[in-house]
Length: 239
Image 1: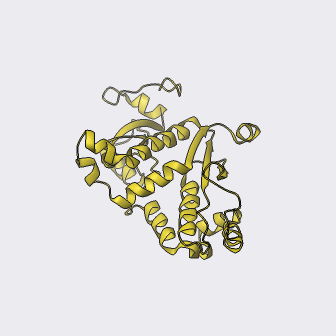
Image 2 (image 1 turned 90 degrees about the vertical axis):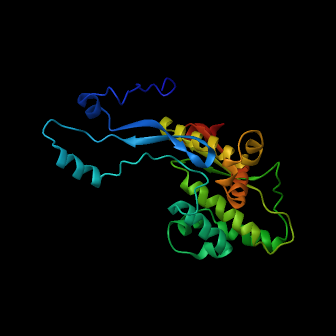
Image 3 (image 1 turned 180 degrees about the horizontal axis):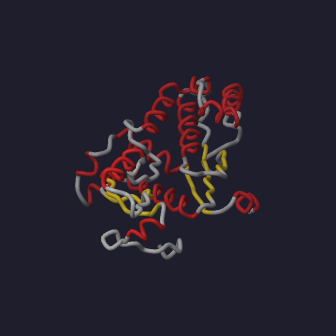
């Protein structure tokens, strides 16, 4: 709250005036997959004097009032997790799919890039110390970033060349401090997911039981390929 210059609101003592003043607030919610917490944003529906209980209930049904947090390794049963899993299964065929993913990959010339790599039979001089870096200058909730990395993992897994996989990293840039805070917190939880075995050995085996080996492997790969900074696009590119 101090870093973002946000007031601290006590829900137990909040008045109707306070509820009307703020449309959203940041809160902490449990995150069982990491045996930790998640920084989430919560809608704060306004309450007026003329509202009665029935009207309030009807309005709350229309509004989505669940706390929202960014998840960089979403479970398979979520919408984003399902989309990532579908791209991973289709592999290179995901380049030809319809929808937002196709437009994003076309904008990056993704299909052409991997076709050239397979045709040359090399990794175009990319290495772990010199990866292909993609700048997501409007990171937002990191959904585009996840599509990019999932597609790169799938393409490398189905690569027809005998060369090593082409390392790809995505550097996320987000100028909104609150959105950046949500993504940074997601990075913290991604690290926890990637190190569940080490933490379980020193704490409890309960954490490992919540996460499959596949999810842990994906989290480890994503952690190696993601970075985030709070800045604007122009400042980031001028560095």
